Length: 187
Image (tube, rainbow, N blue to C red; front, side):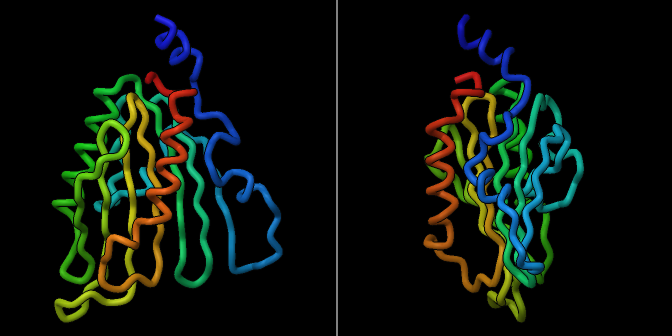
């Protein structure tokens, strides 16, 4: 009962809830770096292999997204999405897993693996390939579901052959967010 009341009260992911919001709020004189912040409920998932606008949209109640870009080839993002129910959040994660399997090209491939973070989790690798071998460029993401929330952390840049160590920072950030997500999710 109390959880339902708290969930009803949390109509949005509040400002300054994400881990990197303080860093994003600082003014940076470097023209080659920038942060963007969005509280749009309809913001696309930051992990979206098919670039489909509708991926993970059904059942959303709120979203908060931060994206950091450093020219020419580094980016990281943080996103928390709240859904009406744990089932809706679970469907969004299953749809993302299906997109990972079905999208990509011979020059850029996606793969995923289940991880034990949150209620369910997924590591996603996007990797550039040239001549069948890993080339420079890709993204590494951790996506987890806890109750009715999806938590996404990504890093894109000059990755070479995929390795477990590529997910170190995203996993650390995910654990930190999982420790506080129940303040706004229906845990």
